[in-house]
Length: 193
Picture 1 (cartoon, one colour):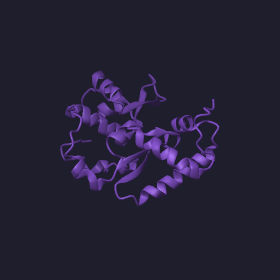
Picture 2: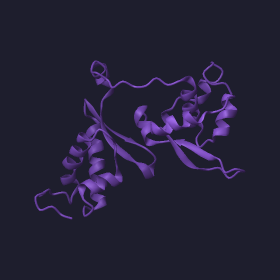
Picture 3: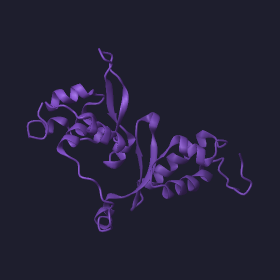
């Protein structure tokens, strides 16, 4: 449905750049492709949206304060404008929202899922040497950090767990390749295999 009051020239990438930039600046959460298409208007050519995103990405590569952050798997790609790391000391002075403290069991479970995904509860238990309580999986799922990504083709069809785009966002990662090597934690008391 076209709104006649919106007289925005956005059939070209150049016309879309300021619109998409405003959408990214005004949303605290990353925007998915589907959200961008919906907000810009489904009548807008998708190639124009893609070109506008490329132009914005180039523009923010040299911006002194803000960077464009891409994250998620290719089919779940999302975009967000975030403050540059050089601003971290100043932003740290602002009041940050209080976050919960998580037990060692929760953090170890999350680390194993992130490093070894997709992984079953039984595989997590085999590495940790203790049972993974249902409340731990429920907490990580409610927090939006993990999800069921499939089932293993084995007796009982156990669920396979993996991380989410929210996990990447909350931990400041663009992809799982930015995680430190799992081997650097083995044998240091953090996680022993």
